[in-house]
Figure 1: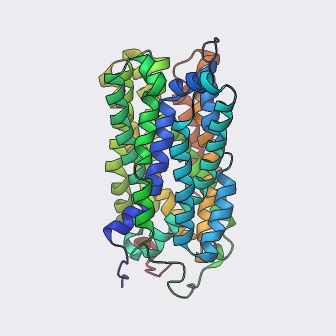
Figure 2 (figure 1 turned 180 degrees about the vertical axis):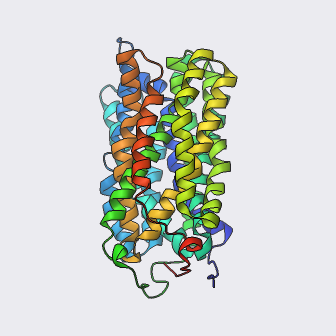
Length: 421
């Protein structure tokens, strides 16, 4: 018999706001990377400002594992609620601080130093955000709806991507390149800062799920969760590589394919919309049919489709081709992305759940997400091959599929165990 959920709509919103704000900020940074690079890292050498900006984007991933360890363990000891409040405070500092930094032309070397420092602080906070918030949703959900509940994390992220894309299109349509360089990108980042106080107020109303009952009995695999952690690292590495290559599509379309900024920013909105639709759909399907089918089938389709999709885009270079490719790849990849988090979190005992999923997620993001966009940009520049993103994504998916077949099924509909977690 299913437990009664303890979450109200405003409490769900309070939990997923942190994840949404994370992706709004990081995605906005990613597709304004050229403007941010020229602001903080001016250079006369073509491409150097962009690479410096993307490297600073990647710096924020270095402190994620530390944040995951510190805040994740804090959530396992003191509770999910205080940990989520702490991480959101730190996220707010990073989100508000970066767009307020003066340019290199105004304060010199202090500008890039401040930018890098704030990315390190924000990376620490974001590393600690995913663990307690995901554990909270898992523990508050009825057993046969965990996939749907946890998928709301990914849904909030893709909704943020969609909104960020719309804002980017609006700014690119109304401002010239000089205005985007001076202040347009700052406006886009500050939009995310508006929700910081609302998120803090909402999170203060949350119930606590860490002490929701005695720790249930676990099997041998759960008692020694190392296998799940290793598999989770590989699987999340694949999902992260795919997601961050897709989120680079705006910069790719404008810089590599030479498409207008207004069309390029629209790609981000299309990717976000695909995720908003397919994230909860994937979570619901995993509750109904099991985790593994919803993980395996989309990745097989993605492996078969990614190279033809990029080949077509490179040949046509039209708005229709760009949006079709982005929408299709985003829909396929996001069907399975949230389910990976569900399967790994579901496999971890409560005493280490927050720290476990936080560390796995942070290490995967740091190793693969932080480097993906820089590596793609560098490889395109080094080889001159516009199909680099396809090869990069394909390699990640093939590695992920190997690990995926080693993952045991955890969905109650398949295991017949509607136990609490």
